[in-house]
Image (cartoon, rainbow, N blue to C red; front, side):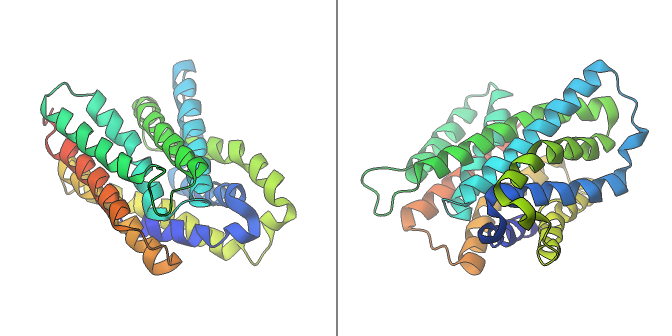
Length: 266
């Protein structure tokens, strides 16, 4: 949870040089190279349904990253992550029909109401930034659905293949925005740092942790990530949130933790 927001904070520092789209392209390209070397996706043997799942998985991954970085360009990190968390929260609630989930939906809706741009807010958020963050959440939901289908077809190597597809989809957009600056040698160490902090390191840690911890406990703990992101934005980017915004981040995190913690073991 500390690694991913730290990577996002570092990524935001690249925006003045290559823009949000350029940063997303760099992150995805370096992540794809790292994951390809580790997972060796060339060993995969997929049928037509498997390829459809992997391509959908990769495109949702690419669009999720692009929209998330576009949101970071306009709104604080903690709020962007909280809004993005509505995606996996919606997937979890949609998979259940228990009355208690209505409570988590209400709590998440209250958090969103505190975060969305309103006329009465002292410093209303950029509407386009909010829309991009919510769009990233929708892509995260698709990423979960298609990622599960892809993993059933080919296991872990599908993550690397999907990363290659995501990088190929976003790289032309990044080049269109940043041009030759995208391959400036001075930026490459920072891009590598973003890829390691945002993708390679948290993925590796998650695999290690999930082998030793029940998935429900892991998901509950992971729900605190919006709070980590808000603290990361405050420490590294100087993004101070108002009290209602902190309450909104906390409400979304609590709803995500609640729906995960109360899910049936099945």
